[in-house]
Image (cartoon, rainbow over all chains, first blue to last red):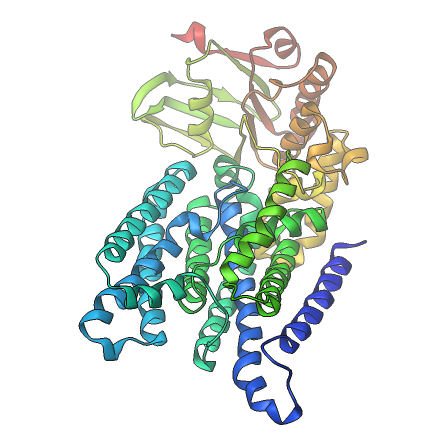
Length: 316
Length: 201
């Protein structure tokens, strides 16, 4: 089947998942409960679709610019930066001015934390010319942010810690329309950036030397891709918590299914697969008989897929 | 055509030179010498990747380099890969798209890769991939094409075929071709002149 046909088939499956997601949730709905539908289920479904799409597209770009199949936004310290931001909001601000502690404060602080690490990564991308140093920088940055978060957790009281943990477990619930709009805007910007550099991303895969020689400066490609990826990851992590695996798995699945690595085709397909995985994780979390954070469900779906990829496509 | 004037190359400190070279159009030049004698450095300098330590060089058109090691990426066909070399022309000028397809087809034909054009890069041999790399330089109709060790991974038959193709390309298209190699015997047979950096020192 042609790549386009496959992409449309996956899109149909994802729309079906979205419908299932709308129908899942605590209790059964009568028509009179349309308020619950509009206030709870629709935002949840949209968050999952947008969140999965953003993370998948970020992961795809990261894997290409670092030429590393395991690269994803978490690796570059963006999620860790968001975590530190959220920790500062809940654990410091929360204990000194409890009135200020709300979901929006946490999200805002997380976005700020993600933005700071984005700026640091993007700035270092223009200084560090080779891929490996940049990757090492990102991983180290992540450790630094995690260390700060741990210090804050260590000295926090139990009540604030619970607020922080519920953010860090990851969830598509309780997102306001404004937050969903921000995620949609981040996706729009990220998608536009990635589509404009899709040919550059193709070329970057053939090495920095080759890219320079054909006139596609690899550092510029990296900066543009990082900018988009950080923006999208920052927005999603702020509102939904740090969600792993979608970013790593979706690009691999799209390349395997389509049989091509050309970004013009893998970008739309990865996005759709990312949304699908996020919806699947959300549905499982909803129908599970006990409380199941969607971040954990994602890991449980994602890990078997990663292992399968590693075993069956060792040359990928 | 490629001319250098008292050209000294190196990464900030001199590695090789000074060179006073003059290669006319359609000339095929073999660059040889032991490892570390500055073959790659000279080529990178001429391709504009690193600035010369001193001296200057000029050509009558674009100078292209085919790097020694291009990673082989799964998920690209031979034509798709060769087409990436036209990034500048294909991306910025939509109307050139037909011409780009033509240029790719011609480069693929010159290297005898027609049969493999639709194959994934991971399904072809090392030698065939090397030919695809050479094709990326042919699409752009440069005035000087330089190849860093184009025969390093090839078996005897492919090595001879690639070297004689390089020689043919120089003769028929008027491109100046410079290739570095350790395969002195076959290289010398398929070149018009030899530049031995080991002897120059």
